[in-house]
Length: 146
Image (tube, rainbow, N blue to C red; front, side, top):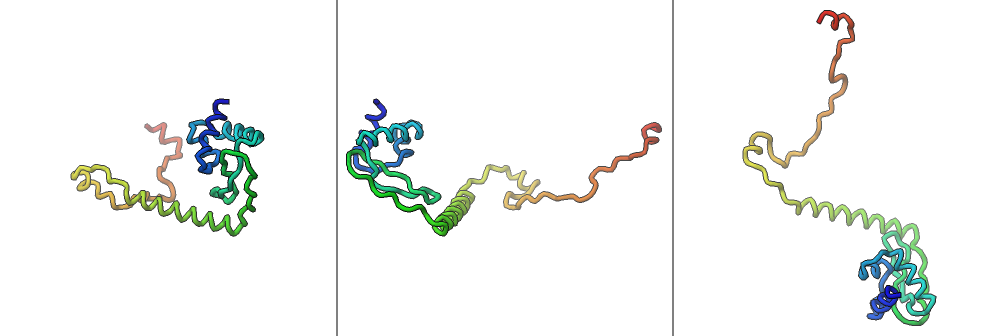
């Protein structure tokens, strides 16, 4: 019951929070928080103030403390909306990767290493060798002669 009291106290500030947000703020596991929030909902101590879409377009409940009527659940995202969100996530991931590559510091390299082995700016491309790399004699008489 102490955790339930902590959840209600956290939600009394009026800022709507999802179950993972509550779990993060209290340092607990979201599954346990979800169970307790459902019980608090049955006791009319918390209510749904609205919804926020997650990364794949499903509505996620935003909880606040107090009695009252829950906000109506919005429709799920259409396939076109989900596709647009996926394209946005891919574009954002590419931008973050490019920013990470640009901000990555170059490791220290002695000047003699650069002279002997070349600079880091050259991309490494492995040489693919086709065919047999090692030729082994299949003649039995070679072993006897040795």
